[in-house]
Length: 87
Image (tube, rainbow, N blue to C red; front, side, top):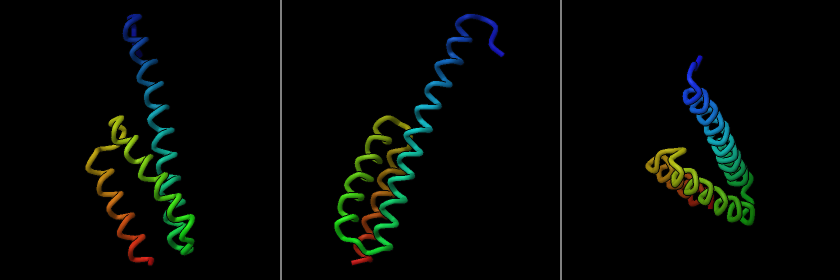
């Protein structure tokens, strides 16, 4: 447990950041799941909108260093490949 006032503040800040980062990651995973479900269902309109939202979420998460930039690029590439394979 932190003893000094500064250590207590740092703990509060890190907990707030952790909560925010977890929320972003959760929304990102949900968006990717929705896209994969649309691909499996073969709904072309849903695929287009979900892909746009998923790419945006990946880019935002990578821009905030919540996920690594290479992971975002790899995920986008794999999702695009899955979309092309479904067509």
